[in-house]
Image 1: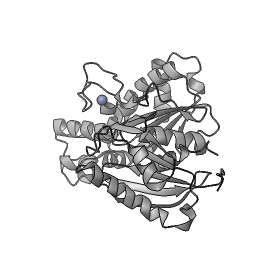
Image 2 (image 1 turned 180 degrees about the vertical axis):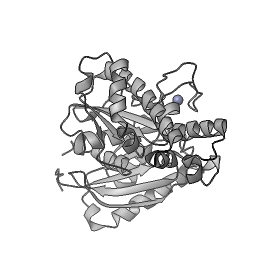
Image 3 (image 1 turned 90 degrees about the vertical axis):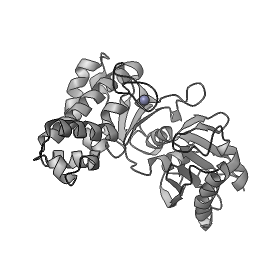
Image 4 (image 1 turned 120 degrees about the horizontal axis):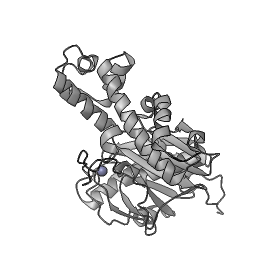
Length: 324
Ligand SMILES: [Zn+2]
């Protein structure tokens, strides 16, 4: 059967705890989806079987029969030219693993693979908030910070496919150690993990029995999360508000570097923490006047992503957006 651009795309988003699979229309709509648990820390074969089981569920639906390709997103280092997952911290079952060709052989479909932040960036650039822009910089603000750059609806891959690891740009060379091995990465100051860590540090220091943040965490420091900090800030907790202001200030320093380096047409905030940081946008904008020297910095919109938790799944499908 000749391929047409109306054919849907199979997509799979593989994480450390779950595999999401879906069928995505040629306009970026999820027609059906499923998730199964991932088996990340046993053999390569067992990891692969978990992925097969998610895709097999989608393949049982007759609408998937004329899929034109299989898009894959994973949270790790990719060699996009060879379709190889080099390594991913949350997927120790695979090292230098030819994930794309294994899935391609299993389903007799062309397969393409991308890093999950790159995939999410592509989803926004093709079908989401950036669909009218040429140069889109995407930031995923969640447990960590992921970034992707898309130019003319193509992911900027760098030499081998591992470019735009923006969450690990150092903004303080004497700063907080990061699990990546460097110090002072932006992820240590403005991610969900960083916000929870800073709130716990302040609470420990001032032994604030009356803090709304602590009461929302049931009085236990170890239960403080970025969601709780955001909730406390909404009910005017001073400590929570100051933590979020600090995270926003760090984010502005980093975004200033991004703007001066890349001058994107559009910056998109995605991920679970995006609404919180977008609520600090006036402050981030004011700070950017100090941290970016680009004369057009004020003309670059900073907007919310269209796709939420499913962004990497839709983005995996977007790897086939231009394939007829
Ligand atoms: Zn780092």
